[in-house]
Length: 67
Image (cartoon, rainbow, N blue to C red; front, top):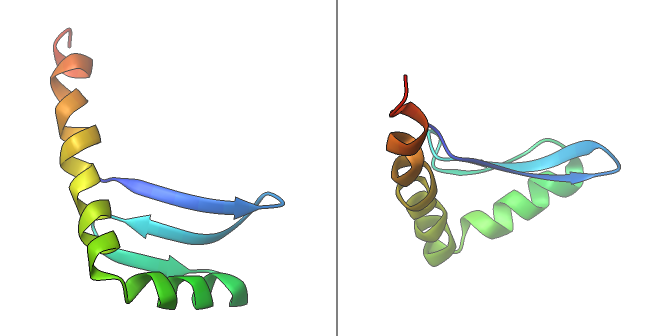
C-alpha cells in the first residue's frame, strides 16, 4: 500500500509525495524548488509519512472485507 499526494497546476503534475520514496519529488522547475524546500521540513515529512497509517491502512479492512 502506498500513499501518494500530487500537486497539479493546469493539468500538469509539478510535485508529488510518495510514501514509498519518503520525500517530495519535483517534475517541473517550480516543482523541484518546492520539493527541495518541503523536504527540508522534517515535521512535514513525518506528518506525510504518517498519512499512510492514518488514511490507507485504516481503510484496508473496509475495502477488502467483502473480497
